[in-house]
Length: 113
Length: 113
Image (cartoon, rainbow over all chains, first blue to last red):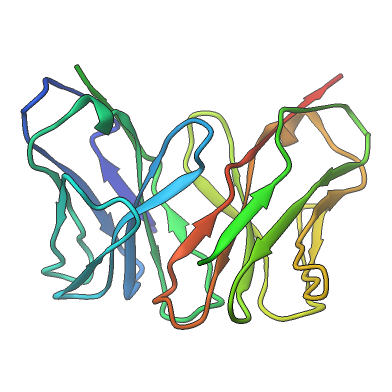
């Protein structure tokens, strides 16, 4: 049981480049989310999905796109990287329901220079 | 809107000391409450949860009680170990928010011999 798998673990981008952060889960979870973690700010929600074909914006969506074509996969796209997007990115998934905790991936550390 | 406030760290304790990390929340409804732990270089792991008032979540010697009257969910452990050194996040999910997690800023715990 792999849980939530994120790739790559580390990435360095130049300003203006684009890339996709991959996230896959094998637990048949309906809900999936992307968070960014910055020092002193906790984790902030970027985008989330409640099922295949359904996505919505979180707290800090600007500069990011998502899609959910399958239950398992939820990629995060950076359209034109900026230094302000330097962060650690976490993908998480959960069963439907308020009381279910999320399972997190191990994160992608992104540096934009 | 929802918010979670945690005591600022770092918290430094000697092994076998008693731990309390304070967490208070603001929510319009009756949220589910969570504590997550992040060990160095890893993703977040669900430590414990409580879904209604007066519930006590517990795991690995850690406990937290959902106190609606004080809107608090303080994390406690009677005797910490060096292996408990990590960052601890308090979080909530409010009903009707598609299970979106709102996090506190995290509290770093350092346990020394």
